[in-house]
Image 1 (cartoon, rainbow, N blue to C red):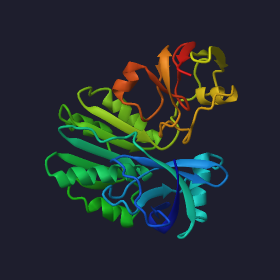
Image 2: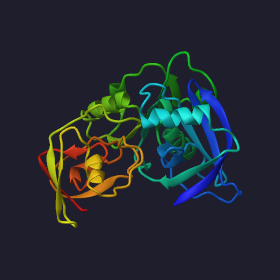
Image 3: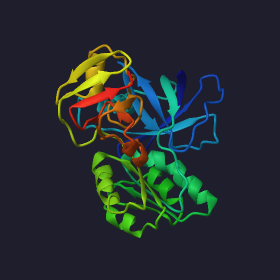
Image 4: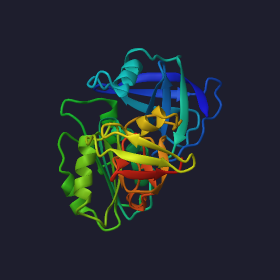
Length: 310
């Protein structure tokens, strides 16, 4: 469902980071959302980008998101969308929105560690607030940013209490080594951070890793494959340097999509047979092990054959 929203406020909260406050034009309540949810902002020229909700889930009158100005990768959809929001979007403007979507849920655990870089802090702020308010679980939050960055966002992180820190460098191995069995580690940010967290988590299987990245995974390419579309009875070929999503849409299969970076879940398709090389940031370890889903914009067949429920 498409929502029509109005920009209530816009302000700079950190270096190259703005906060948008959105509401319904007529003041009606917005849909409820769970911790970790995101929305898709629909921008001019068919640019659609997901942004995590970072406000108070109990406040149905407004939504809050953080947008970092990604001036690098000038031709990417991400850079184009952030540039439009930073340079052109203003209070009073109307903007389309889809969602909220629930792909990064807070799970039950004995303790929690939250690690973020850049705009990745957005998804983790509501989670950390909820865990801190419960006063039951041990928790920590580490926000990685440059030494020279200051502003309201740093102040907000620090206001969460002694469990929250802002640092310029951090050893991820330390978090996993210190985590007790049954702990949940939430990591949100760019591929550099998420990739390092996945390597560290592999050494500590009793700790559950939940991750969300804000850019495409660093790995590209892969083997070519033939994909059988079970319901259609058709077979398509996916070249080595072509994503599943691109090949499906080129063959007239209208798979929905949004981020193109494996972070929103819009393009997930059910897998009936074949092995998947998962490169997304949304499926859990159990979902990956089950092998019954593929995030088509980034993940690929691990072999040369795959059967999809399409």
